[in-house]
Each structure stands twice: as C-alpha cells, then as structure tokens.
Amino acid sequence: MANGSRQAAWEFFGAELKRLREEAGFTQSALGARVFVSGGYVGQFEQAIRKPQLDVAQRIDETLQTGGFFERMCRKLINDKRYADYFAPVAELERLATKICEFAPTVVPGLLQTAAYARAVTIAANPFAADEYVEETVSARLERARILKDATRPEYWAVLHESVLRIPVGGPAAMAEQLEHVSALACERKVLAMVVPYAAGGHASMAGMLTLMEFEDAPPTAYTETSFSGNLVDDPAVVKRAQRAYDLLRVAALSPEASLALLGSAAEDFRRCASTT
Image (cartoon, rainbow, N blue to C red; front, side, top):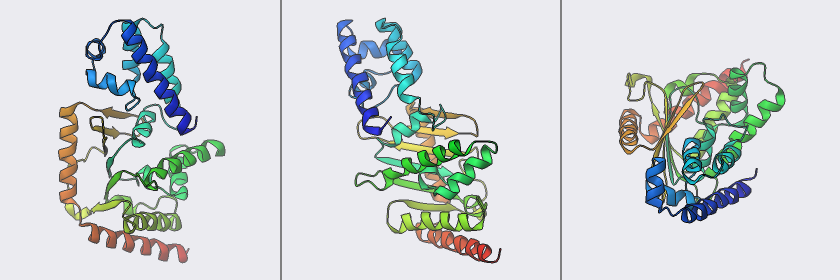
C-alpha cells in the first residue's frame, strides 16, 4: 500500500473511531479510560496523528462492540511484509517524527544504510532467503531513508559505536561506500553523526540499540530491539530513562568533527583494503 493510501486509510480509521465513539456516548477521556490510554491519545487516533497498537484496537472493539472492525483495520494497515511485525509500527512513526535519535552498537542504522550494506545485512541474517525477499527488504529500507531527503525531514542524530565502523559488512568496498555515505549526509547537515570510540569503554546502552522519536502533536517514544524482537514504548517514565541514557552516550562520543574524521579514516582503510584484494 502506498504511503498516501495508507495515510488515507488511517484517516478513515480515525473518522470511524470518532463516529462510533460518539454514537456510543463516550467522550475521548471516557473511552481512553476503558482502553488504558489517555483521552488525548484517543484524539490523536481520531486525527490520524498517532496509530494505535494492536492491543488498543482490540480493546476499542470490545468497548464499542464493533465486532473486531478496528482490530482488522489495524492488522491490515500494519501488515507490511517488508518489515518484521514488531517493526512495522516504528516505520510508520518515523514518517511522523520531528526528531529521531539513534544509537547503533554494531550495525549502521537502517535510515543510513546503502543498498549494498543493507543487502549484506539481510543475507547474513537470512542465508537461505530467495532473491525476491532480499531485494524487497533492501527496497523497503531505502524507501524509509527518503525521509532524510524531504524538505520537512526530521532532526536526525546518529550515535554510532566504533564497532559499526570496523565490522566489514559486505566486504571492504561495500563498507567504504557505506561510511562515505554517512559522511556525506553529515557534511550535507542531514544527520549529526557522532562516534563512541573503543577507548570510551563501558557506555549507557550496553544492552543494545536505542531509538528515540519526538512528534509535534504526540508524546515521545523509545524503541529498543534485539535480533528477533522489538519493544516500542511511550510510557513517560521509561522514555525519560531512555533519553537520559542517550544524553550519556552523547557525552561519551567524540565531537562531530572528530567523529567525521574517524569515519573518513575508516573509509580510507577499507578503500585501500578493497584495492589490494
């Protein structure tokens, strides 16, 4: 489903939610209390500013007695096979974010990946996958990255551990291209890239990757991911802890200028290696 069609469908979801809520005699706050979200969240669902999690859609169905209508719509709209089920809501939120802050301990963030790098990562995790699956996955990742080219692109911070720069994903040539791509985006001021060096030792997100997103008309979120699952949360207390961890990562990182120099140096090393193989 194209982005415009998907957004129109979410707007229909919101309009139907508003209509059925009012018919049932619920205020936004009253419905929110029944489905364990705030009344403000219900308003954001109705305006298609924010998309409900599947369990919230199920509780709305139970409360409004809609026979599973909102659950079915929600499943349809988040059922993008190019993304893992746990990541599809994150991909939706990226398009709405005004600010995205990512920490990557071992792999270049998806929004920054080149085609060759994304292909190598996909094949490494799916060595028996058909070419069609691999190319669909790569295409989806590159499509996500288009938000960095938009005039209304989010403020984007990327804190990378030095490991990201050193693991030769896809081989030396692919790594050189990947690091040069990140450097180019930084030089174009589309991303503020910083590197946590090996010398920094322990850091505030040793458990893994972290993504923070902020929105114009919705509360911020935090997302963490392992190899086979992801966790998207908007609980204010949890998000505040995640934001503090990210602040500590930025303190541990090299300056943007020193980070750019390290990215360039690592890219040159891979270029030299590629030319001798």
